[in-house]
Image (tube, rainbow, N blue to C red; front, side, top):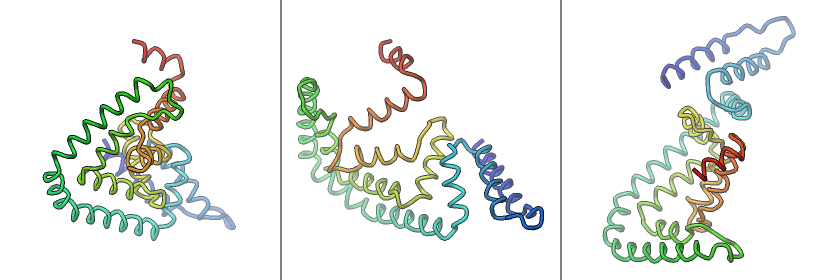
Length: 215
């Protein structure tokens, strides 16, 4: 189904690109942009704002090429680091496991006293312990680079792919994940969970969420 949808989008965009300018004095570029927006809106599971971002990318192929080149470089760099990361994790498996267990205990205590905490977090120590793994850290660094706000092409590709699976992802969600999970300096699961809960409430209503949580 995804392949058929991609083929349909390509065919329709090809038709739009060859669409006649219309009446004399009309702006063919503006007409094509509007038609492209309609095609994307009808064929892809995206929001109007994401459609506008996609249209802007289609109008700047040089930007797309630069984004893809940066993403390719990031993947190659991660693959280059992977063997050394695996060796590192094997050598330090014992200390890393001990640190992870300590972090889980610390986060368990934090959960028990979360009502009294001035700035309650969620699994901060555990996330930072996971970042001690060189493999986990390398993957997180790769995802941070791929989802960087400057790489509009890859960000939109991720969003469109995930939304195609029925998950209402938005580009702003990527920033929350980058800060709360992928960045060891600000690792904290609480903002991500709060953001997800607010999204579910916005989509389905507070009463539906209450029923879901109390079943």
